[in-house]
Image (cartoon, rainbow, N blue to C red; front, side):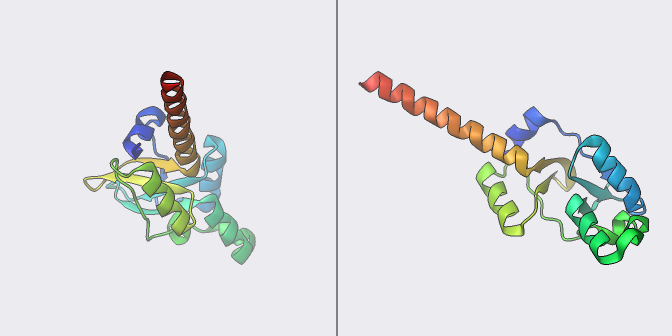
Length: 144
């Protein structure tokens, strides 16, 4: 299974913010949409970084309440790892596990087309395993 299959069912909507957005606004957006990360894009919609709940919590631990007045651009992760629609679920799991992050932007031809979370990946992997189990059961039942 590929990331394209996940996006086909999940959709291509990506929450994004500008780099000058205050972290307090990003936190409201994350809470309001019940998501764990946003991508940071400039006016031309170039991917500049990603900002997660974890980044915000780390900033609050380091800077206290002043972190809420900082901007998305100041806190975002700039070295963003991405996937393509052809990335497999297994490859995405490996990327996310190695990098210890939970959100993976999906880029095609230099343009951001979606984002997948570890929850999306786990759900897809479980579905894949269920299908394999059902296939094996049908095979065994047909052979016996």
